Length: 379
Ligand SMILES: Cc1cc2nc3c(=O)[nH]c(=O)nc-3n(C[C@H](O)[C@H](O)[C@H](O)COP(=O)(O)O)c2cc1C
Ligand SMILES: CCCCCCC(=O)C(=O)O
Image (cartoon, rainbow, N blue to C red; front, side, top):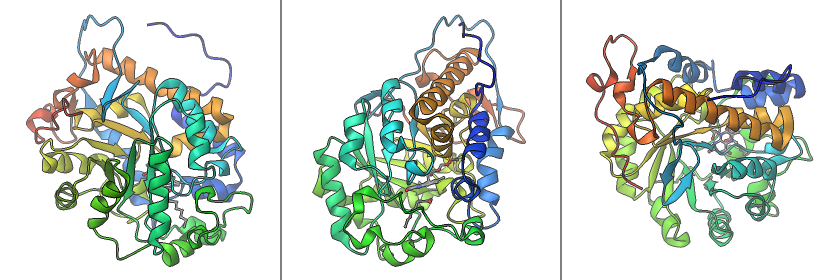
């Protein structure tokens, strides 16, 4: 496999994109994006845990070019990587969500659009060439959420993602210390005219507007109304995974909201085997949190994820170079993943299994130390 020589200063890693973004963004915007809840222990753990897993190489794998693509709900993704729902892309760059969608779409990768997107669902759909899912927060004014679900269906979104870890946003100390408020030019385009659009202070507004009485019956309600598959985002335990499956989810996203909700919970990767084991192959399991390289993608797949999502890296790349920056970041991530596949002896994602990694404290492959993972044949 050959790759062109990089230009001077060109980001060579996802961390390089973060460094570029830090230089571009106002300090309080950087803190809003980069920060987490409380002492940021979970935020740190999300990335650090990947550094504790060891890969098992394969000599002479005989793979000319791996096929990185995966199938999810009947759609082909160019790689097992999507963009997680992240509010207000236009905080990072004027290209906003349409720029992100165009970049992901050019590469055949999906985008999950946030309830708090700065562009309308219809505008984003017009810019995308790959699957779109809509993330939903449920508001006290239930009609607002239901209308969003119907608009998503009507504009071709393929799934709904119900965020289940956020009765209100976590205590983010950086934002409190900075007195962070979303700038006036950045507004939730899909909530205009509703009480859910609310104030510019995310933490305070979430406590007023989000429906805390929400329970698992929301899954069937949203599915039956829209006819779309509904995934639960923010599951970390077997108990919640079983509740989600019982409620009829089409998939689960193992996530701690990028360490922005309950500080002190497990890193997403640590929680993954428990959730995969609990769902017993009844639906695909995805992961977000701390993915910063192609090797991280492979590790998550080895422990049972069908695919992963990146959150902050998308905003960092957008800040660093607009839509083109997101395209470069995703291209890099796919290339790193493809290289890691070859070096571990996998011609396609379907064969990446627990035998490919060694977990911390074990000298043996994870096959011998984790429960068997999801049946990947499930579409
Ligand atoms: C600035 C920011 C905004 C976010 N907005 C949302 C959101 O609107 N809805 C949601 O479900 N998750 C939201 N998340 C969480 C992400 O979907 C995702 O769980 C997390 O970013 C993954 O971790 P990573 O950033 O380490 O990749 C947000 C995260 C960040 C950093
Ligand atoms: C009331 C505005 C809430 C925006 C929340 C975005 C989000 O989920 C985050 O983690 O930040």
